[in-house]
Image (tube, rainbow, N blue to C red; front, side, top):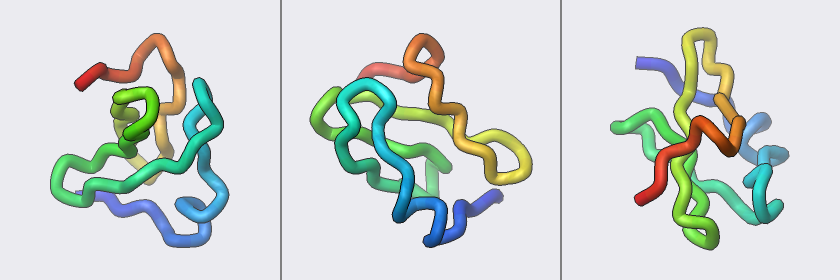
Length: 57
């Protein structure tokens, strides 16, 4: 399982609303509660921050 470093999490924001993101370690996804979108994390701990590829929940 991959994990994102805290330093990166501190500067990341939702690309749609610029809001805070929460990291779900089990699902390895970044979640924006305001937009109700989840962004996946790729190999190498690189977040996929493309709005078109985010999943709605």
